[in-house]
Image 1 (cartoon, one colour):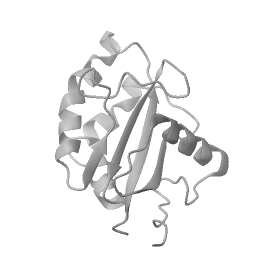
Image 2 (cartoon, one colour):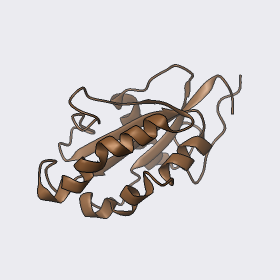
Image 3 (cartoon, one colour):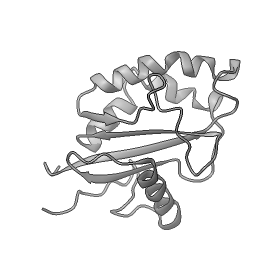
Length: 152
């Protein structure tokens, strides 16, 4: 990977119930542990936090109060993939349908950012919309179809 770029990712979920409900309890109880594992993971660079706890549950995506957002930046697609499918995160990934509705549209988008740049929620909305409208491109792609970073 190019030393001048890092991998940004956004993942959204439409909650089945309010965050303080019994339905979401296990998800919320595990959030600190999953985020700590991300923070300690090889290749982790940054994640979006809202200042109201350990996660970013206070941000809204597409103006929808039932959508929550996870955003982070990683050194490479490989390090991001290792975390996502690793032992700390995989159990929560496997239980996602308990907490989040199945959405027919893409819920995760990846894109390259210049090293040191931190994406905003608005940036993420734009990239996910691009992926939904155009499919994977160099501007917004998936873990299944990764594009190389821009040329130096």
